[in-house]
Each structure stands twice: as C-alpha cells, then as structure tokens.
Image 1: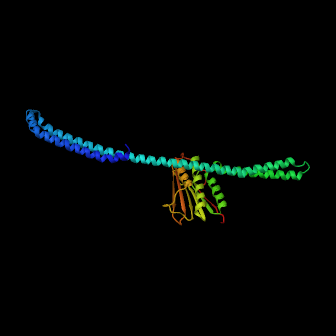
Image 2: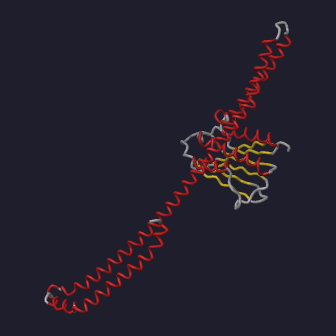
Length: 332
C-alpha cells in the first residue's frame, strides 16, 4: 500500500480497534453478570485462603497495568527511533544529492578545462608549430649562397620555437606551479601574487607569518589553489583597488590563509557560491580544514581558510624567516 493511502487508512483502523475493545469489555460485563462470576470465583477462592489465592485477581490486575505501561513505553521509544531514522534517511538523501551535484560540477569543470586546454593547444602551440614548419620549408628552398635569407629564416624558426617553449611552460605552470615543488609554498604564493598584480593592475600585498615548511603536499596545494581561486573571484566580481593575502602559522596546530579585498562586497544572505568557491570548500574539507567567507555590501570580501596540522617532530628547525611582507603594487 502506498504511504499516503496507508496514512489515510490508519485512523479508521484505530477507530475499529477501539470499538472492538469496547465491545469486548461490554460482552465480558454482561457474561459475568449473567453467570455471577465474581460470586462464584469468591466462593471457590475462599477454600484456598491458606494459600492466599484470593489475592491473585489483584496481582493479575497490577500485572496487566504494568504490561500496558511497559507496552506504552516501548511504543514511545519505537516512535522516537523511527523519527530519528527518518531524519537520518533524509540527511543521507541530502548528502547523496550533494554528492551528485558535486560530481556533476566536477564533470563540468573537467570538460571546461579540457576545452580550454584544447583551445590553447590549437591557438598557441598550433600556430607556433605551423610557423616553424613554414620557416623550415623556407630553409629548404633557400639557395645555398643566400646566407642572409637562411639566417633570417633560422632566426624566425628559433623565435617560434622559443614561443612554443614559453607556451608549454605557461600551461604547465597553470596545471602545477613549479615553484611549489622547488621553492616551497611561500615562494609559489609570491609568484602568484606578483603575476596576478601585473596582469590585473590591482595592488596585491602578501604577508607570510611563521614557518610554512613541511606542511605536506596536500596542504600546500590546497592553500595555493584556494588563494588562486580567491584572486580569480576578486578579478571577476570585486572591482577592488587592493588585495592583501596573509599566510600565517604562528603555532604548530594549524595554518591559516586569508584573502581580503576592498571591493564592493556582497550580501551573503542572497549570494550563491559558484563552482570555484564550492571546490575550495571541498578542498579544505579534504585536508580536515574549513573555509569561511565574510562580507557585506561595500565592505569587501574576506576569505579565511584554516587547516589543522599534525604535530611536528620535536626539535624541527624552521627553514624560513619567521615573518616577511612582500608588496606587489601596480598602478591601475
């Protein structure tokens, strides 16, 4: 039976059960009155007075009341357990829907990244490869005595090859920042802030407090990607004049990253998180951290990432300065 139909039929079953109990009670009363069961029972129990058998009816009455109370308690507990189970099932359904949404968004992001990569490979690398082929064809058709033409074609082929190499390096840097593996997190963030400031013309200040060494590859890439996404959101939405990025590890318990801009801000009550911020939240959760967004209209946006760290070995020396500030400011 469908749940709705079962819920509608339940009150009628309850009423029929009550009528059955009332009919049974009245039937028992009339039968006991006609047969004078109480008098007969009292007469027979009087013979067993030495065994105190006349107390059995009262004891059975107490037992019946106790069983009814026990059944009522178990019914209430069952209802509570059912309610908790329904809440858990609803929560599981919400989590499953959230996971499906994340999967759909992940597929969408992957496809968009592949499309962008294919476009860049076709537009940038394809043109460079075509230019090199043109110059090599020119070299094949140049006369042996035309030294100046050969050198010019060789120079153009060299320039095209250099452009191809730089294009490949830029793509690799976007896929995986090389400084993150070679120089560490602080240097990678410096390069990120510097290139972002040069590209957008917005002043960007990076402040590093405490040692950021030995955080782990997962934490490093999470912090870098969150900072990258925060700066991308500033470019798209904030209309800011300056941005401050702060990476802090004042204690060994956690590391924090904050990105604060002085842009137009937003109303968090009506704003919706895009794919970028949603991905940043999931990245933070994957390393056991959390991401918070603080903002108000006209007050800019502040993104705060907190990541707990495992205890460092005793006597581990810091390999970076305790604090430093790098400013990258470009006139708009």
